[in-house]
Image (cartoon, rainbow, N blue to C red; front, side, top):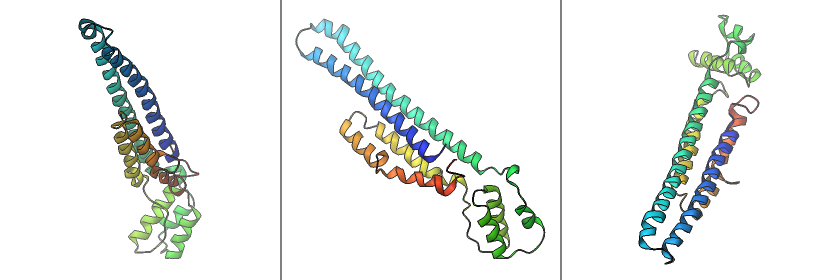
Amino acid sequence: MTAKEYLNKTRAILQKAQELYELEAGDLRAEIAKENNGDHTIDYIRRVILPKEGEIRQNMANIQTEAERQLQELYREQIETLQKRDQLRGEDLNSEISLLTSGIKLTENDVQGIIDRNPNNRTVQRLAREYADSNGLKVKSMYQPALAAAPRFEEVKDAAIKMLGRIDQPDTFSLMYGAILGENGKANSLESWDEENSEEGKV
C-alpha cells in the first residue's frame, strides 16, 4: 500500500474507535445519571446499574484494545509490503545489466547513465549502486531500500496508539489527531515517500 493509503487506514481505525467509544461513553453517562438521580434503591443500583456500568467500561476498554490490534496489524502488513518491495525481480533485468556484468571497466559517467535511465527499476538501481560501491565510483542514486522507511511508518503507528490512550479525553484526542494526522499534521510528510521511493507512486 502507498504511504497515503497507510495514513488513511490509520485515520479510519482511530475515527471508528472514537465513534464507538463515544457511544459507550454516552451510555455510561446515562447509567451514572440513573445511579445518582435518587430514583432507585441501593439494591437496584447494585444489582442492575453497577453491573451495567461495568459492562460498558469493559466495552470501552475492548474498543481501545481492538483498535490497537488493528494498528499493529496494519503496520505489520506495511512492513511485509516494504520487504516485498526490496526483493529483486527477474522481470526487471534489462539490457543495462549486460553492461554491469560484461567485465568492461565502467566509468562513473557510465554507471550514472544506467541509474538515470532506470529511475523506477529498483533491481537495476540496486545492481548499479552495488557496482559503483565495489569499484569505488561516486554516483548519485535514488535507490534506497524500501525498509529504510519502516521507522517513519512505525512513528505513525506509535503516535496513533498514544492517541488511543487519550480517547477518554475528547479534547486532547482531537488536538493530538489534528497535530499528527490532520490536514496539516506532521504525518502527512510521509506521503512524499510515495513519489520519492515507489514506482508510479505505488508501493
